[in-house]
Amino acid sequence: MQIKPILAAMRHHRAGTVLIALQIALTLAIVCNALFIIQQRMARVSRPSGVDESNLFVIENFWADQSSPQRIDAQMRADLLALRQLGSVQDVAPANSFPMHGSGWDNFVKTTPDPIRPTLDSAIYFSDDHTLATLGVSLIGGRNFTSSEVGSQTPPDPMLASEVIISKALAQTAFPHESALGKTIYVSGGNHPSTVIGVTNTLQAHTVASWMNNYAYNAILLPARLLTDRTYYLVRSRPGQLAAAMHDAPRALFAQSRMRIINPKDGVMSFAQVRKAAYGRDLGMAILMGIVSLVLLAITAAGIVGLTSFWVGQRRKQIGIRRALGATRHDILSYFLTENLLIGISGVVIGAVLAFAINLWMVTQFEMARLSLAYVSIGVIALLLLGQGAVLAPAVRASNVPPVEATRSV
Image 1 (tube, rainbow, N blue to C red):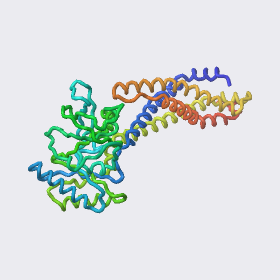
Image 2 (cartoon, rainbow, N blue to C red; image 1 turned 90 degrees about the vertical axis):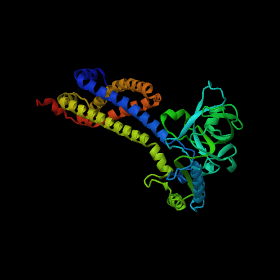
Image 3 (cartoon, helix red, strand yellow; image 1 turned 60 degrees about the vertical axis):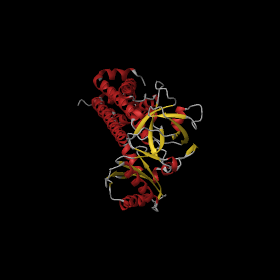
Image 4 (cartoon, helix red, strand yellow; image 1 turned 120 degrees about the horizontal axis):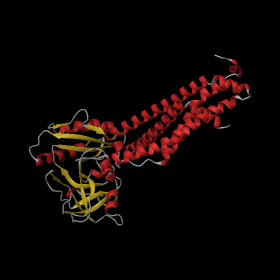
């Protein structure tokens, strides 16, 4: 098939051609970036926490009697003992925060006392000798805390732990070419040395915010119960008994002492609920981007169908003349498919440039990752196939125009 007659017809219908090409370009640019955002968000949602989420839940406990830290400490000890006696509970640990919680302590970490040397950032988890077993986190080196090493402290107290346990990610960053065991770190910018006695497997930080991406798996466990007006109890149920444990645990706490407040709405949350709350915005953004992409693709396909149908209606006599001169149905079908393909190619070339331009702007404004060429390539192929599929029905109608149309004046 000769391309020159097609190009001449496209120049004759310049406005419609440019409109469809720009629509394809805009759709490609937005859809490529939208799919890239969806992939980035879903990758965040599926990040492992490192804990036994299927059997883990958390109780948020507010103290009604905050008269003294000693009273709170005694009550926490009694609560832990009561919860560990439940048949549906495997283990319990107190916590100031936990993976995916969204808030908590994060502090600078140094490997030397030099205040000028650059520091790392890390989540700080106050822990006891049951924390690792409760979370379902294993040690890849070293040992756990002993009960005698676990103390208590209030927020104003300096963090002076002599021994700490750190996560694998923090160990690899702080000591990239050697074992972290036995090494010294300095927590919270202070000059008090803490010896690393253990290294955990994967353990996520408490926040999933984008600013923490570089430190998402940096965590330090300090051997202390934090005495504040609010305490979290991490509870690991026995396999298959999560619902029973979530029902039994609050009752056991109130039976032990009613001088507490546990919100009936969200005071007890499974880690499935914790994950949903932590990544709710990411899921919402992914769904929104998916809807936007589908709507744009539908509008683009409808535009191609509508404009091609209009052109077929305008050219019925010309098509009839071509049929009378010997053109086959396949020739007419190929004509419209080729015409649409040329428009589509011009649109995706502009759209590819626009897609990278939009991504570059988002990189500078929102610290997003750079758009992969694979997404643009897939988008180009998808838009071209969509265009060919959309034009197929009106092209088939054009190929069915009989030669007798050439003799009709109206």
